[in-house]
Length: 248
Image (cartoon, rainbow, N blue to C red; front, side):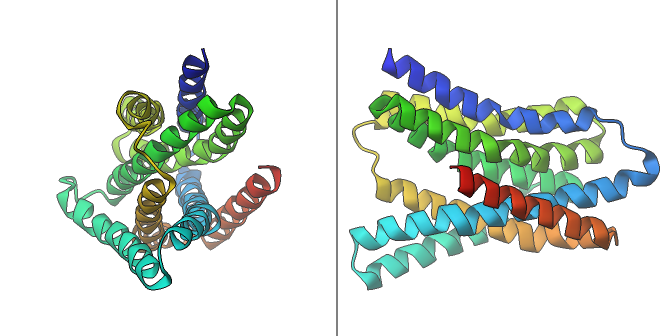
């Protein structure tokens, strides 16, 4: 029964990404679309960088430094971050629809958050099997930041393609990584996964999200020349990250 509950908790956490995607159903006036996109991109930047520097990197650093000597630990940490950063440029080159930067941003966000959600699903599942209360706490924390992550995928995809179906499908794919991680953890990895392995993956993901935010999202947000909405998105995103850490 614990195993079933753990899987359901991981699924619920992952599917919360779709709640962020619902924002595309709100009708935005044509003269306000650029402001809305600017706000959403800036908000996403704050969420991605905030999660990376306040959650993924610190927790991973601590785990790796405990496992290895300082010199080896620093090499692993830097290599994981750098490889994550490099992967953004590689994926960027592989995306065929290079003419539409909004579409490209949405796909890059989906890939980054899919990779992020996968180890989260493993952590939530294993935590829930060991202690259902711990699993619920992890799930709530994940849901809290999965909703704005859904926005960061759905909004650029929708305004690039005008397709709600594509926007929600890509958002769903990102969310499905969470229960997929749980399923794989149960079937194959439960006895082999350790904190160090998850920490390396999360550092890799942090490298992706920070690079994506600075190299792709920020220039796109600035291109709309809606500075007030850039500041507004960043401030609200930062406040949400602070609230997340305060509550959880």
